[in-house]
Picture 1 (cartoon, helix red, strand yellow):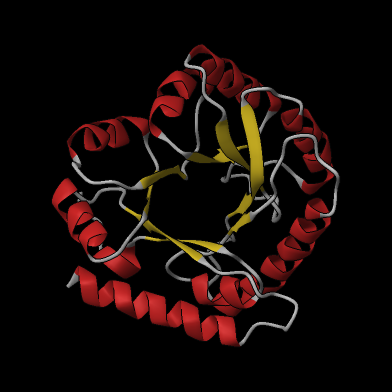
Picture 2: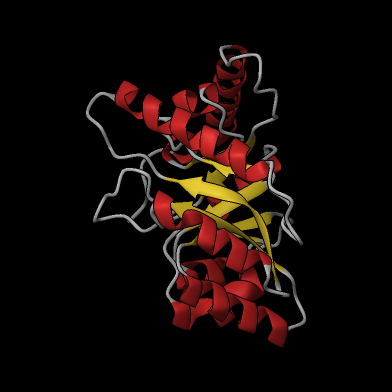
Length: 229
């Protein structure tokens, strides 16, 4: 079942890439979101070809990390509290949800303690949703410059979450604007940053996100079915 669903998502991504404007040629990295799905489902997905997995919560990820018995790239895609920074840098290869200087400083310090350079994305709250994390566009550049100066963080790009619109097409202008911001950020001469990833698009809107230039999508229900609570 997971293998078939995974293939379906991969085919949708491929189809969406053909509908992109000519300027966007990036490959798209699929992150299988395993929140609320057990280790058996994760193993099945990895055995079917998944290379990257995404988790939202530290405690759940820690338990799975210790029992998975498979190689995968680990992504933290949920909101991260500063007091969980030490645990996060021990588990995750890429943290998508840096949204403040305070969190970036906590991650930098925690990564230094284990002699690691932690790769991160800065989360942007483009729609100014009060219920979502992320930095606002007018504060973005200042945070990016501050992260770029941190010795134990490497800035790899941007992440955003679109509002859960009733009509999914309403996400399109936001995704298009986010891609333009990403392209501008890529053009800057950074010290250590390697701006590669624009993480946007989830199960309900990833095809539109890819059409508008996303190169990293986070899909859970589309691969695993409804979450197990």
